[in-house]
Amino acid sequence: MKLDPDQYDFSNKLKRVKVKDSVVAKAVARIAAGEQHMVLRTEDGTEVLAMSLEEYESLMETLDVLSDEDTVKAIQKGLKDIKAGRVYTHEEVFGHPLGEAPKD
Image (cartoon, rainbow, N blue to C red; front, top):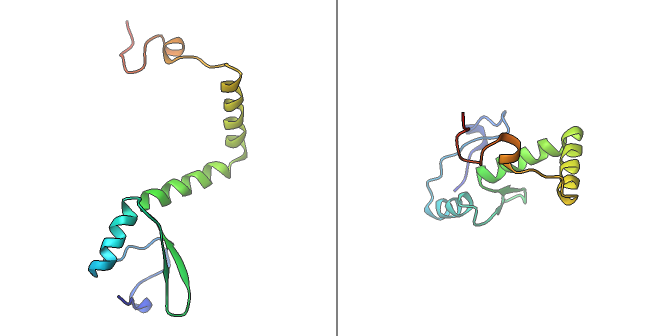
């Protein structure tokens, strides 16, 4: 299946393209299910990586978190607290077990 780049507006970073070719559609289904990634190569050797939208969004969220120095420090502090045993149950913090409504 060949795409005509002039047919699409690539000004945004994320574009949706409808796939009609059955072989490509099956590959897209495997990618969407998280079963695999796929490198797509054009005739001139240009390559892109295809991954599920869910995986892409998760990756972008992870990059966003890791790019915030204060958030990374808070995560590191929390991990140290866990290792040191400085943890509390939901019930100790909120007065009722997780999943149960607070008692009046």
